[in-house]
Length: 339
Image 1 (spheres, rainbow, N blue to C red):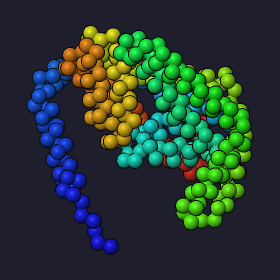
Image 2: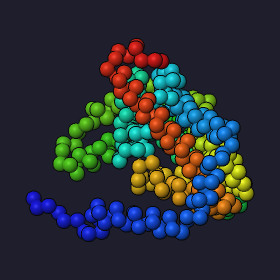
Image 3: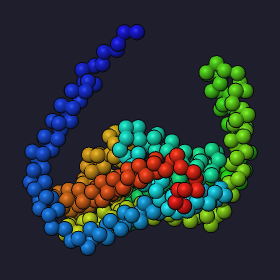
Image 4: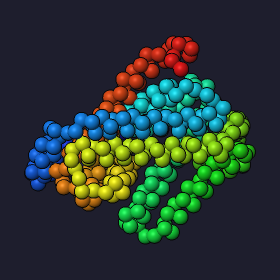
């Protein structure tokens, strides 16, 4: 087959040149703000920097505890240290590799299986942790948007809260009655088999076995509520890290509610995987949000740089070290790994 010639605007050198041109323009127009930011970064208040670091570590711990709570609801009990290690390693894979979310999900699934979860329970735990995390960010944005009067009214919050409640109730009902999934799943599988020109009953036995494994999930209301609170804490502690970075650099003039709105905008930008770690995209969204909230451009740049050094460089670096340790232990007997 003849090689397909890409249009000139999609060729690597052209894309690289365009990116460099954008950075050059930003550097020229933002040079004064960049000098101001560098000046602030030279003399931070280290006690607040330490507090920001603690908040970020607590944020990662909250996510690990959320996933642990979901797994415990399915009857699989694993020590918190292993969940924290998995959270760091999976986050590093997701944030730094091209197609990182796919690698992260596969890595997460494999280790949940090693923890003793069935394939169905591991898939359920990963999917639900993603749903709770995304839902928590939406609710936080809605609450603080209302507090800053940047959204319509309390009706907006009620809509979001109602949607979150419906999702929670739906998750619990499906966990209690996984047999409800059998007929819709069979219809979908049959449709896919027709499209792929395979026998209609292909994979039906495996599907039934997969759904039967979900019967082991017994998520009590208290456990689900606890997982939801941990999902909210994960985001709020990360936002607290950003706020402490602002204080560490004497970046005053922004209300905490406005800072959380800026933070939610940055995290929403991070959900679009244009570049690994959202480099440039997340930073730009955070800076714009902080400036709109009242900070000077130099202070916003300095605060975001410090925040990213903690939330990205420190967390990702730690995660890759943890990944190396987990990989070195992958071939050892299960009892050898620290619990």
